[in-house]
Length: 215
View 1 (cartoon, rainbow, N blue to C red):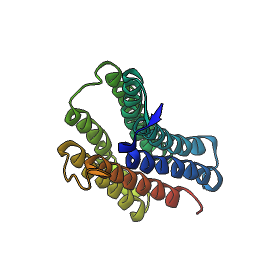
View 2 (tube, rainbow, N blue to C red):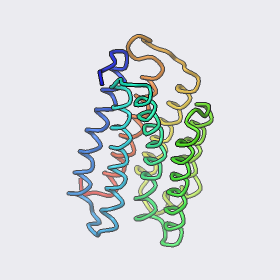
View 3 (spheres, rainbow, N blue to C red):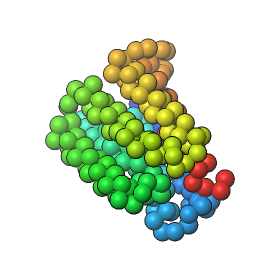
View 4 (cartoon, helix red, strand yellow):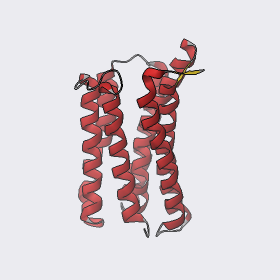
């Protein structure tokens, strides 16, 4: 497979995200306040789901092969969005929410993620607005548990969760509307979408690091 020059920005922006996610995995593992197996596992699931998202995106945008190969890479790229959303809920459900509520949230979001992955495998060509709406709704379901997050954590963590969600949402609007299409030959609307995804992910990762770790 060959590098596609027109995808250079999209490739390297999310390759950076993949490297950053691995670094956060290391920080979670070595500085987590809760060193129990469930606590570490929850943080590592989140960290590695972020890595999987950015890695699959970088591969999809960075390499060119047969139509079949590109289609499979695109499918995996889109599937990983469901996975990273569920991954983001995992530390909150495991370490913040009361046991019964946390278990319900954890099982529910991973069930939704599994159904989303299945949907992508059988309906890859769904309208982009429909798939994007599902991603956004899945993320903002967190508003149902936000009062508990606010009560049980610190304001800075809560603000970080909301801010990251807003980055993702604005990026989703750019992706669906295909505007603004800045520097179309280098960045374009899709590259801008990548920037917002990167900003949202890093905001959430930093928030988790600040609250859950001795850092």
